[in-house]
Length: 135
Image 1 (cartoon, one colour):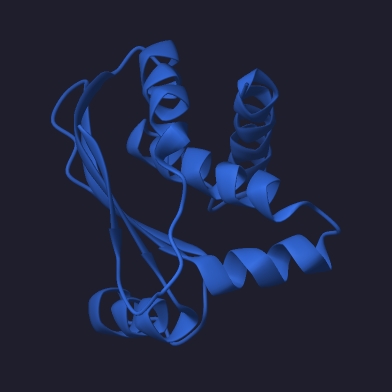
Image 2 (spheres, rainbow, N blue to C red):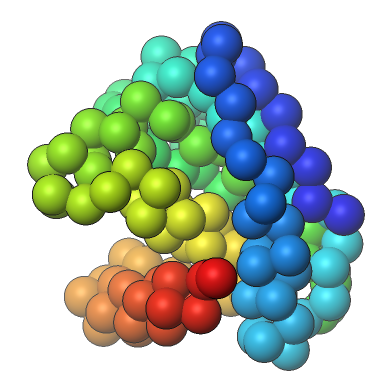
């Protein structure tokens, strides 16, 4: 089950993405477990980054992986402030950047990494592929 939660926010995100996200999971040959998206502001995600990953910088997404075998489960923290800033910087629509980040979290839970240039290129191509499938 995919659920959406909010911390330190007044705004909300459409849950129309659920079916699309489930389709990504199935397309990757995985099964849906429990996935919680926690939408928050920059300061909330910075604190998560500092407390759990010992990183002292802003980010748009942090994914905690609870995957067991082919069953995808995890917590995906998303800063809507950072997505807005990134969309502006990249001259992208906010909704497109939001979908990219939502897919990015699912792809991490599916086993994709983005630490090396090669991994990052594969991740980006997967994101693009699934963004094109969104309808």
